[in-house]
Length: 534
Image (cartoon, rainbow, N blue to C red; front, top):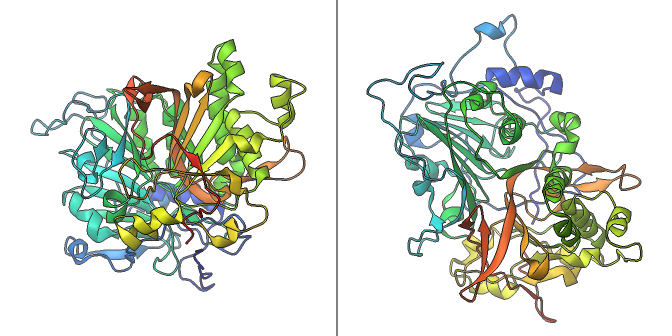
């Protein structure tokens, strides 16, 4: 069911900002953009929180740590100088390796352990009654000793559950979805905790849905990108997927490029203060093979300058690069690709949207280009049939072992399913690897070649919805623009192979197995089967 968010009062004490002021405020660590009404046809709400905690009333444990607890206004007071205005430090300067050009570590400073995940791995969240395995992870598992500070983002937040995971000395900067019913505009700080909201401009239903963690240690940074919110149910009662990579620090700062540059832009899009983003030039990204894919609302000021870097447009950029790296034979096989797309929230899909998504995910501009590359006589009428959309059935929702608390996080509006234009024949049943559990992950499997052996995988926060990936508006497809509603973030893992090992379907990337929360033998919905409608 859609959230009906009320428009904020026009006399709100926190001022509405124009994009021209946005970058300046990032440097000062205080950002606040108001949201106003706009078309809601792209609204897709991903989750319903099991527990919402208003940040205007933080936990008692948080208040006990500080004598100062206030909202900082977004705009500086009259006659204030930016260079003199520094009411608080959100994240202190990162401590590089001992002997670096910036600073030296204290002789008593503890040294972080050897990098656990130097080349990147995929893990699944561990259900509360599930045995510990090498393919699963809890939030506690991700937090190593000597954590100095962390940047976290989430759609829904439970501070009572989250804060005990971190030492009292760890500084936390949380980027949170803005809900006018419980949140106030501006930057919020209480002791070690700082909460900010990204820009929302001219939107009736703004959604900040990205889930990323950057954990700062004395000698490395841990990058975590997932589909899980920062609340208990997402880490103990729902199947979520997590990408983890440990990145060493450099001895000297280095100009950002590739993944590092894209990550810096993504953090700026989320209103992470520049003093924190600037620390990325001390990070070694040379072993990162994943490709970052983000979405930013089209009405946001930043999107106007980087419109080709988000949603479907960004996915196309990534897949064009993958296609160009293939051999001529593999490039021909590329045109046989099928996409299996799973998300916990269903969008307002149409056959036209599935075709647009399919072509974008191939890195092609049009159906005409597809026909030209394959065969002039090839019909494109079946392109939408190459997109299989996985979703839980009504029966699976009823028998899941965690009951309604898990079921409420799976969203499919009945008005979407029974719409005359919804392609019901694209729906496929997914069978969870862990029996009688529901899956909250957001995953795309792209398979091509003989037996679908080659391909790539997307994982992150994007549900398979127009609100997350964007939809095309305008005239011809070549001139149409992508319009996005949500903030989203995920990674594409290129060079994936799909194998049959010991009678089981397996996914390999970078020489390592990629665990999936579902089995790969999807089946079409039966005649009398219905999806889990909320």
